[in-house]
Length: 455
Image 1 (cartoon, one colour):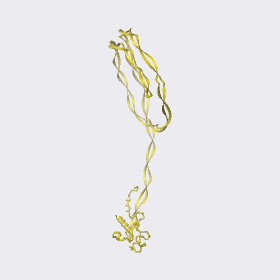
Image 2 (image 1 turned 90 degrees about the vertical axis):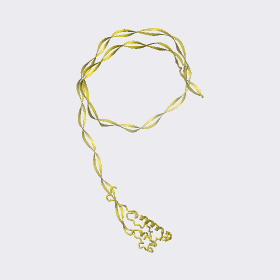
Image 3 (image 1 turned 45 degrees about the vertical axis):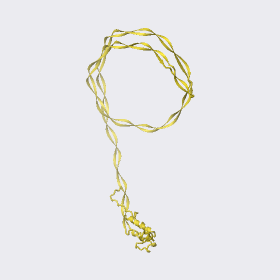
Image 4 (image 1 turned 30 degrees about the vertical axis):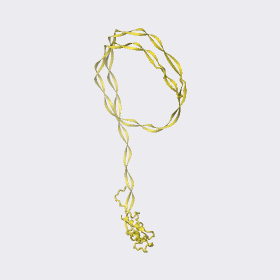
């Protein structure tokens, strides 16, 4: 605040001049003979100056280096040995026995009867009709253009991974097992059978005529439309069925279950874990640009006139008498005695030898090279800057009008002009320190001695 008031007073003194009168300053006195050095300090004072110094400190860093070492690991291998084991298997033999039974055999007798009826036979007459039309035929032209696209090409790499699996080892035991086999026994029953008889019936059927193209003119433009020809009738014979019933003997076989105790060898499996190194392939995709030439087809239409002769068929019906012979079948049952072979199953035990492969685990040591990272401390010098506040002694400069005599001691009779001849102002009268800090600015605050050097 003091500096602001001093600056305002100095500005008013400069505006007044040497010959300012009291009326110009609203009755205030004239300050033309009062120098600005009267407000300047007359004794030496202490100011502060900032000094910077570059220092070095030691910084430790951890560096990791790869180191290889060799260890032994256990590898399990499976060894198979052959072993002979005697087993028993059940052999089933089939024997046949003779058995008599009575069946009824149908005997069919066929006779013929004559039947006369009238039929309508169609008679077709063919004529040719001119049907010319215009078609547009496509003409295809082929050209090639270059097509660039990026494809992903697979690159396969093989790596290994540890695979653990469980193997089931077989263990054989002999137990008694109840076995059942089935014997078939014939049983004769009667069932009702339905058979179909009937007679022929004449029906009249209508057939629509064919659809043919016809050319018509619409506003001077030929157009093709489809026109259907008149239809015709035909007679056909339809069978009228009738259902009748009769009794037919049926022989069926009834199954019977027979139980028998047999020694059976049962094999059960015990789990065992196996560790293997399984190689597998890893596929990664690599981008690759492919340039292909793609054929491009262009189609244009060409008008052509096609001459066509269309055959037109006309049908008329002619009556004819037909004579046909219809077979009539008569059935009668005849009893017969037959002999059949009945199968009987007989089982027996038959020994046989089986070669089994028994797995055995063998352990061996295998050297493996591994890599580990070893830490090492490395020291280096790092620069940093230190700021210090240094006190400086500042003394003011002496002017010519320190005695207060403004009549002739100053050059030109003006106390505002210093002895070197340059005009004196308030800013020029301020003391200037050696470190270049202005006098009206506050000195910087001193920093603590224990400040962080890296700041």
